[in-house]
Length: 208
Image 1 (tube, helix red, strand yellow):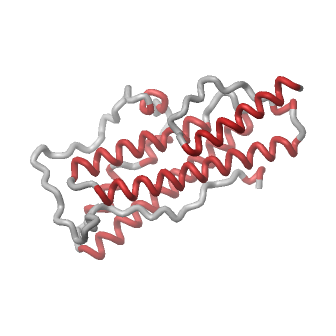
Image 2 (image 1 turned 60 degrees about the vertical axis):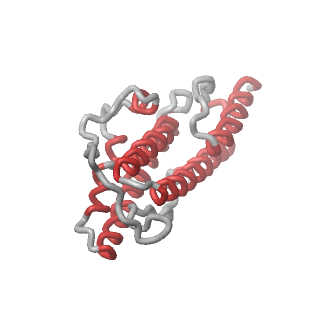
Image 3 (image 1 turned 180 degrees about the horizontal axis):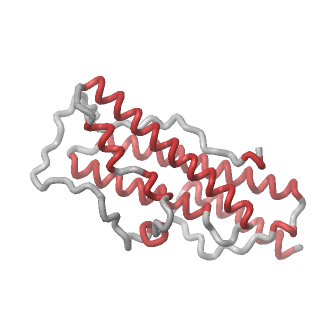
């Protein structure tokens, strides 16, 4: 029991660190044996997971919105999205961590997939709204579709290689070498695609 309790504590401490710095390594995390804990303890652990995922997602959205708003040209905006997508993939990595019990891992993956689709839809809605405001003929919505997060949850997608920078998506949009910056509509580059970080992460039903 002591070893199991220690594994629980290691995971909880790591989750708190990961929520602040998602680049922290997860290679050292121990196996969690759900049979070693009362149901209440595992429900508490699920709450820690949910809070860490929510904090990660909120910070990710805020950082993406800031960086897109500051990006001066199409090439930079495309790179911002690639970087953001690679960072978001770390949440999906967590959902697949082999140290988690299979039942919890499946619940996390299902919730992460639901969140991924929801966030993608919100970004495209935000882009479409901006297109209507600016009369930009669907360019901003297309930007988010071209850099869709949903490809990360496709069967067989190499998450680990993608996060490590060893895999580049074969159909990633290319930015023309002569691409010119948009004329900003405001001092914060108002013509850059906007992100609306108003989503909540999915909590698996069995832990609500």
